[in-house]
Figure 1 (cartoon, rainbow, N blue to C red):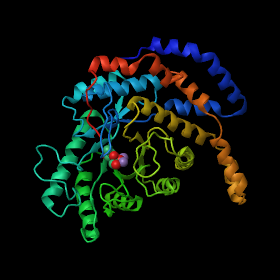
Figure 2: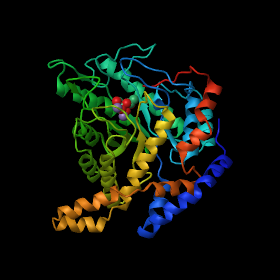
Figure 3: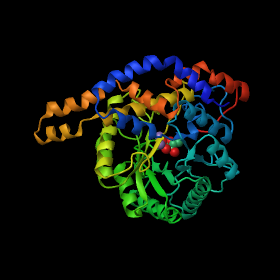
Figure 4: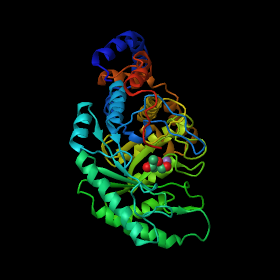
Length: 424
Ligand code: LRH
Ligand code: MN
Ligand code: MN
């Protein structure tokens, strides 16, 4: 299924009068609104190939309908999202869940939908069918050099797949750790990881980045070998200028001050990218902004301030990705909601009066500083985000159009009720 420009146009015509009223209302109040709109128009968030099917929990999985059964169908799904919002112009692949067998064909398909390939992700947290050695006791940190080599070789292969597709980054997330005190020598595990990563790093093309993702716990429950941003930053610093820390919002211990982490990583020039999601307890992978929208805003507030301070390009200098697993909602609907929430947080952060905030901080004016942030956060920026979509040729209300066009029903007709996607 493809969504035609004409269908978008028709949908927008029906909503445009109401939208213009709301947008003009904001325009009268917000001086730099045009700049905000144009920044939003350019901003893109990559969709993970593993989030397009229904996930599950360890207790069960309830299948969705019309899931993409192949990589081609996953790319088509992202094409639908991008047609609806013009903000999802990239896909992030997880290998070997999604192996591009014919890279040129896959690339052509993506290009025809105006999509690029974002970071490629390696997978050494599961054993694959024909795999020689097991990752039960870890991969890059393993006590056995043969297992480490197997995991390093896999990462090199993933880079090669990425090169063929035009990706520019590799994300490494390790399920390496321990569940019982005494199981592991922390220092040796860390050093093994560093040595393994060095080999992977050496395989990176000149213009590539290596993202080192951390996670506080799960699947291991006592220690994770890359468990927090300190450990990731340590590795990235030792590896060199192409290595960066990747922040997944669901990978922290409860109440962690993620915005402060972001600020300092940016200061060090070591923030590489993001996995957006939301959570109440741990790595719940819920819709971005669905539980802690103020935190999402505060993170973007640091991002905008920090990136502008370093003269970074908002679109290209960090990897922006969603990382989620959908158990209840239609994954495409959830992804549309996530992208919208991210755009809203970004727009609100762009509204922060930076000069006034600096001044308030200088004067230790806590109330003013707090209000400056809260004023931006409490502004209903949805018409600004919608205006950016309108100008980019997207739908004023992507969710509504998804329903109007009965997208999922169409996909069920094409793919059948029971097709199952690989992924989480
Ligand atoms: C681990 C993680 C990591 C994986 C993805 C499937 O929890 O966030 O990014 O690659 O999930
Ligand atoms: Mn992640
Ligand atoms: Mn995760």
